[in-house]
Length: 236
Ligand SMILES: Nc1ncnc2c1ncn2[C@@H]1O[C@H](COP(=O)(O)OP(=O)(O)OP(=O)(O)O)[C@@H](O)[C@H]1O
Image 1 (spheres, rainbow, N blue to C red):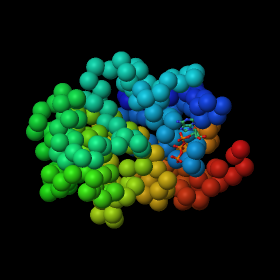
Image 2 (image 1 turned 90 degrees about the vertical axis):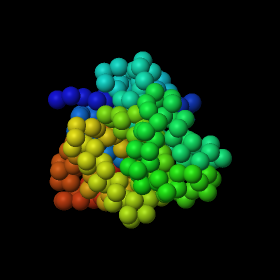
Image 3 (image 1 turned 120 degrees about the horizontal axis):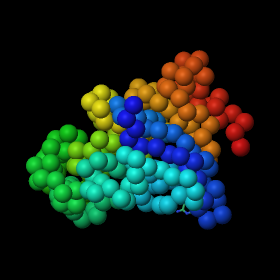
């Protein structure tokens, strides 16, 4: 089995706060892995650690067997859309993607490809400050896709999307994984995640559960949401 991303004993203190403790799991090729947990559970910290935005206190987080920062042209291998990766809102969507495209070292035609992929072509010349939350979310996903990556790391990608957008995202993530790509996605939308995830990781500072979606649902008598509450019950 090809592993696209892995955490091994990943531990991160943020100030006096132990944000993530001893996190260990893999993201295999062809898999959508859902990372779930309550507010402040350490999900964003883990994703930031994987994508080179912060260093672990101990342990490691690797992409394609190495540190994110040592990858040549990382955007061609990993597409990242994390909370707080805000876009300069005086730019148009197309201009923002042109900058991403140049940074990724891919062709101009990729801008039009990703605009079409997220159904934003018609709004591409509008300024980002005039975008709705859902349009900003689509733009963030488009930026992640610009380098034609094999791995996607997405923080709450369904946030702000309308039902049509959520439906599109679900199909898109499934297709992405079915062609050998992998996705690590954090989400609070458990019903939605249940439709797309192959594997589930439940985090509340420590990893409380890791397994297939079916295994997780068995814990909750067929429901991921029920499993989530059962797994969290009694966790400190
Ligand atoms: N920049 C920071 N400086 C100091 N502590 C931080 C910082 N960012 C997060 N933390 C702390 O790290 C812990 C984990 O936060 P993190 O944002 O990773 O959780 P999360 O699971 O992504 O939460 P949410 O679901 O609310 O986005 C929390 O206790 C938080 O207060």
